[in-house]
Image 1 (cartoon, rainbow, N blue to C red):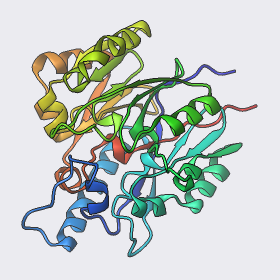
Image 2 (image 1 turned 135 degrees about the horizontal axis):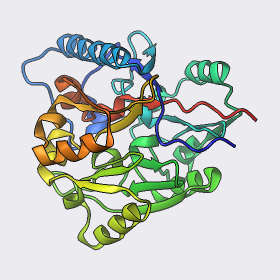
Image 3 (image 1 turned 135 degrees about the vertical axis):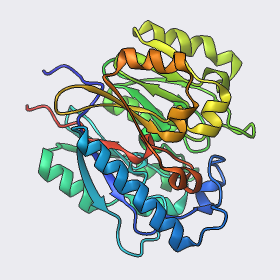
Image 4 (image 1 turned 90 degrees about the horizontal axis):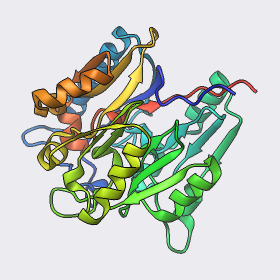
Length: 314
């Protein structure tokens, strides 16, 4: 069996056709804000420009980007964040997830699943969306809700109304992961809706907004990360809450160089010491200006990327 990889050189991104502020999602996502002074058409135009610039920069730096366009005139304003509805795994599994905002469930697209299955040969489709239909629905929004340590088979999850223990356990049982749960708090004291806004796990490091983690959970989380050999690089609460600094992702390029991607807002919020420590673990830090996407969508660079881990040959 090939060794498990923490990073991939291939990703999928969804080009927006109707990006806008989603009030259904904003109920539990306090990172979202209305765009002052912009019409809905201007929001879509600016988001599309930001998206295409990000794709270009990734491709120029040797990352393979599969771009799938959102359906025309879609009713899925958050389709630009595909990591919430599916994930792919080296063991040949493709997983789809239960989504809390009802208008996000239309983002799950069979044609995308078919495209990936035909292209790469996934052998099993694990469907967790049945949790939406239970008498008490429960939610787990993909690699937004979970930050995966793929090498050590650990699923880190900040529990919230959109990241719940039931479907998390089902994921872990099926894919043989160990759940590590904790609580983390957002800018208004609410439970942070997605773990990936305050935690990034790379191959040899972890970026974590430890200040936003519940005090009683911090030491356990720290020990878990350090126990797998990760250098912990801590963020302030302000960097986490107001600059999307936790929403980073480590990728590789075709030259097998390590690239840490984040938004311009995240990058410019980092201190010299934080940047120096991140550069020790990465060949490049790559950042993108996506201000409209961050503001209206309440998500950042990591949310826009669905990692494609190609199945090992059996």
